[in-house]
Image (tube, rainbow, N blue to C red; front, side):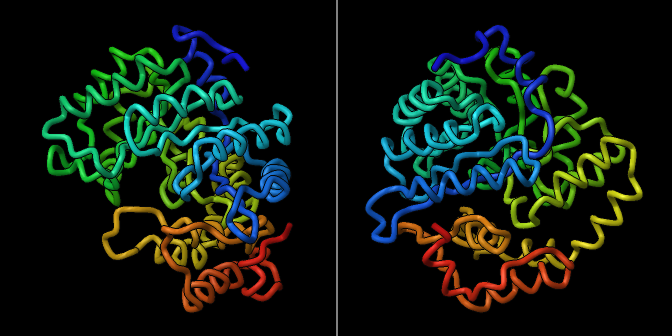
Amino acid sequence: MELPYGRSEARAWAREQMQGVFNVVIPSYTQDLGGINEAGIRHDVRLQIQNGFSGFLAVSETAVTNDEYIRFVEVAMEEAQGKQLVIHHASFNTLEENVAVANRAAAAGAGLTLLSYPPNFYPGSEEDIYRYTRSFCDQVDMAVMLFPVPLWGFERLHPSSMSIDLLERLVDDAPTVVAIKAEGGHPSLGGFIEVWNHLRDQVVVTMPLMIHAIPLATILPMSCIATSNTEYYGNVVPRMFQMARDGKHDEAMRLYWQVDPARHANARIGDIGGANTVHRMAWKYQAWLNGYNGGPLRMPTARLVSDQMRMLRKGLVDSALPVTDSPDEEYWVGRT
C-alpha cells in the first residue's frame, strides 16, 4: 500500500488527518502466547470506531515479533476500512530495525510513526539525538511524530528531554516531521507550552495526557489528543474533546471533574518505581474493563496484581462510568 502523500506533502496531510482523539491498541495474543489473536484485534478495532476515536497507536512494546507486528497492522487496517488512522510504534531494538519495520508498516497501511528511542541508545549529546532522528527520517517516507518525554533519560542533556533548539532544527531539516507529542518536562506543562509557542504553525502539537489536554483545549485551538491510554474511560475523552472544540467548555469540564476518581487511579498505575517504561499489562486491563479484548501478554511485562485491578475498577465505578461486571480472572482469558 502506498502512502497517501509524498514527503513534501506530509505536513499538510497531517493537519487534515490528525483531528480528534488517538488512543492505543495493544496486540492480543493466543492463550498459548504462540501468536497474535486476530479476532481479538478485530474486536478492539470495532470498539475503537464505536467509541469515537479517530485512530490509535499500534503498540509494539509487548515482545511482538516483526512479522507479527506487521500482521497486526494489516489486520487493523482491514477491520478499520478507512475509519481509523493507524499509527506505527517505532519502538524496536536498533535504528536499523526501526527503519526496516517502519517501512514494512507503511506498506501495510500505517500512516504515521511515533518515534521512540531504544533502551540501549545512550546519546552523549543532543547532536547524537539529532543524528538518530534525522537518520530515521531520511530512510523512512512515512510521516513522523516526535516524542520528547522523560522515558528516554535525555534530561541529563536538557531538562525538557529534547530542547526547543533541537526540535526546531529537526522540524527545519526533516520535512516528514509532522507532529510533536510534547511531554517534555513532565509533569510540568513547560515543555508543551514551549513547543506550542514555537512550532504550532509548522507542525501539529499535541498533549496526549487527558488531565492536561481537556483544560488546554478550552483555551487553545488543539486539533487532536495523541496518543495515550484514553480507552480506559470508554468514549468519554472523545466526547469531552469534541465539547471543548465546539465551545461547550462548561460541559466538557463538568465531565472532566466527574471522571476525577478514574483519572487519579490511572495516575497511580503510572508510578512503577522508576522503571522508565509503560505498564502495558495495566493499560490492557484498563481497556478490558471497558469492553476491549484483554488477554495474556508475553514476558517481559510488568505484573498486574489484585490491588491494582481493584483500584482501577473502583476508579471507573466512582466516576459513574461503564465497567464490565465480569470477574477479573476473565481478563487473563480475553473476550475472543
